[in-house]
Length: 119
Image (cartoon, rainbow, N blue to C red):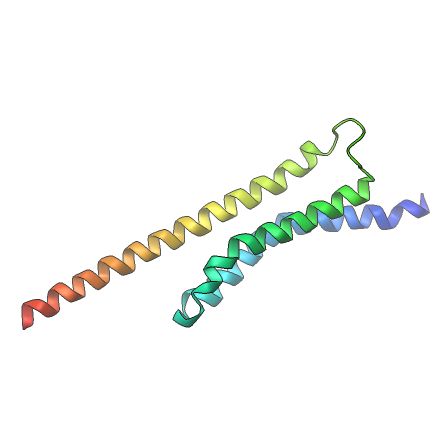
């Protein structure tokens, strides 16, 4: 039992990290890239970075369970919430980014029309 404690702790860290990391990283990328125009590229790498961190957390869980894929599938229900949180976070992130781009475009078009009217 003493030898299993590091594996249990790694699995718990992977599971809680997998639940918290996507939302935390999305908030970080949004805050850093939205108000600074020169950092627009952060929106491009947000998805791959969030997915890579999530995959690392899942690897912690697989390592802690000593699952090599030969036995019966037992980690599906444990890993499913992590992927659901990641998919939901990425969907909401890019939905809000699309809404922001459309709103900025509408505002820019409105300003251009107003400037033409004053010429």
